[in-house]
Image 1 (cartoon, rainbow, N blue to C red):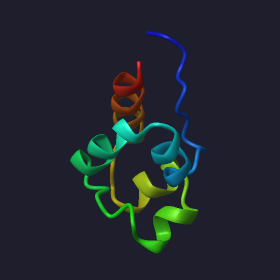
Image 2 (cartoon, helix red, strand yellow; image 1 turned 90 degrees about the horizontal axis):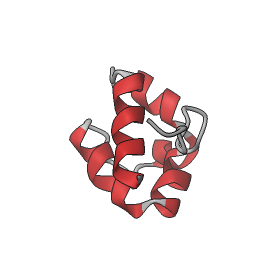
Image 3 (tube, rainbow, N blue to C red; image 1 turned 30 degrees about the vertical axis):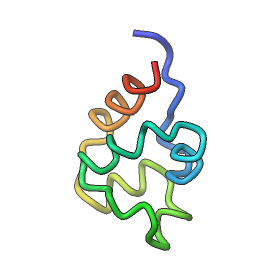
Length: 67
């Protein structure tokens, strides 16, 4: 596996803006509310924690979709 481009400390909206193809991945993990206020300020780790999502699985899926 290549080195991760998307890391836990990256902002959710920053990732979506840089990699629009990640929207479907976030949605599939239950983070479909990308327009909500929290998504503008939370990083991926915080968002995953708030929604009870396994961070490692989310990061793997995000990085797979941008490769």
